[in-house]
Image (cartoon, rainbow, N blue to C red; front, side, top):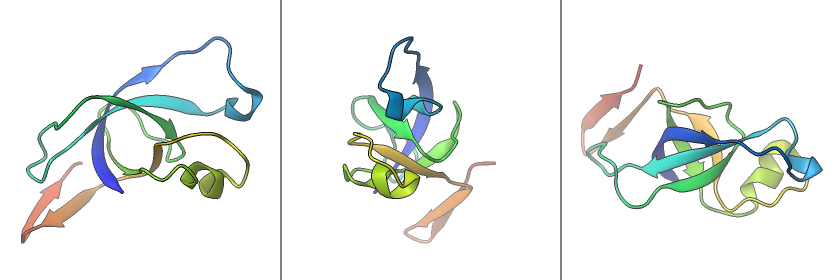
Length: 95
């Protein structure tokens, strides 16, 4: 799992039926200081995230299946929206 910020969403007029009702979000991974790190990615949203949220992203392809209890294909899955995290004795709050 990794921490990321949601920076946008993907709009698709045609998609697989198993994705209907769910969002694809553009994320940017964050380093330990909360700064963007690496290339932007697209993640399946199972955590009801929005643009500007800091989220927990599962990088295991089977996470979406477990979160939604149905078969979908997704390498990256947003599993939840974070309120805060503590790293090396420092707490970062996001609300």
